[in-house]
Length: 397
Figure 1 (cartoon, rainbow, N blue to C red):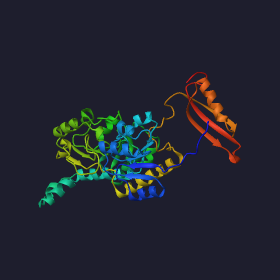
Figure 2 (cartoon, helix red, strand yellow):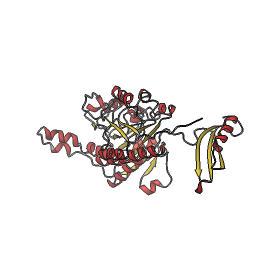
Figure 3 (cartoon, one colour):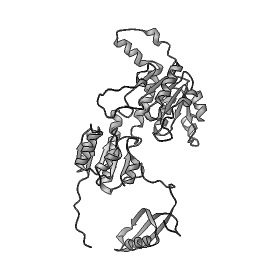
Figure 4 (cartoon, rainbow, N blue to C red):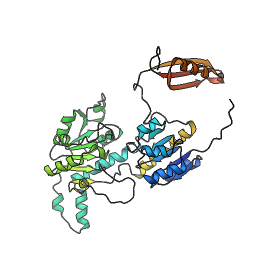
C-alpha cells in the first residue's frame, strides 16, 4: 500500500460567540484559519457550520445541539466552551461522534463569586429599589434604614468547588458564619477555611443567606422546589448564580407569595434568551418585587474575559499541536472506573511493524484498546507501550 504526503493545513476554527480581541490576535498569530461571528445561534449557526466545516467550534452561550455537530461533520473534532459550564452543548452526542468537548473551568470563578456577594448586598440593602426611587426624583431614606445587615448572620453554601470556596472566603471577610453542605466533605478543609460542614436539611433551616454553585445535571434539575424552599427560613435570601435549570419557577413564585419576607437574588432564569443582544424577555420571576436579577453576567467581567481567552488559546494551541485535549479540560473523556479494564505494558524495539503485529494479536483475541501511550526512549532504539483494554484479560472484550 502506498501513502502520499499529506499537506498540513492551518486549524480551521469557527468562533460563534464573543471572544477576547487579544485571544483572536494570538490565534491568528499561530496561523489558525479563523471565522468569527459573535451572533451565531440556531439556524445561523447551522448555516455557518455547513459553510465553513470547521475542525473547532468555540462558543460561550450559543447552544450546540446534535444538528450543529452533524452540520460540521466529518471535520468537527473539538467544541470548546469559553467558560465553565457546558450544559448548552450536547456533549453526549459529541461523544458518539468522537468529538472532544472542552471548557475553561475555573477561569471565571472570581467573577461569579463577586456577583454572588453583590446580589446578597443588593437584596439586604435594597440597592436596586433605592436607586430606582432616586431616578424618579424621590428621596426616601427611612424606607431603607430598616435593612438588617449581614455581619454575624449565617451564610449557607451548596456546591463547594472553585466558586463556592471563593464565596466562602468573601463571606468570612464580612464576618459571617459560613455553613457548607456536607455532601462531599474534605477532611480538615473546614478548619483551614473557617466554615462548618452541615447536613443539607440542617443547612437549609439555619441559613439566613443561601447560595448555590452547582452544575446543571440531572441530579440538580429543579432542585429548588417546594420541598427545598419549605425547609428554609421564611425570611431567608436565596442566591443563584449557577444555572436557571436548578430552579422550579412556579414553586419559587408560590413561595415568594406565601412568605412576604423571602427574597431571591439570581443571575439566571429557567428560560432565558441566548446571546448578548437586547431582546424581549417575559418572566414572571424576573418581574417579582422581591427578586433582584441580573442578565446571566456572572462570568462577564473584563478580568474573567481575559482569563478565559488565555485558557481557550492555550487549549486551541495544544490541540493544533497534538490533535488532543488534556484531561483537565476535556469534559466528555471516559473516566477511570467507568468500566472494567486491564492494563498491559510492552517493552519493544523501535522498529517498523512491531505495534502493527501487536494490534493484529489483540484483534485475534478480541481485546478492545481503550487507551494507549507509547514512550520512545533516548536514541530512539527502544519503547515502552502502555495499553488499557476494555474487558477481562482471559476473555473477549
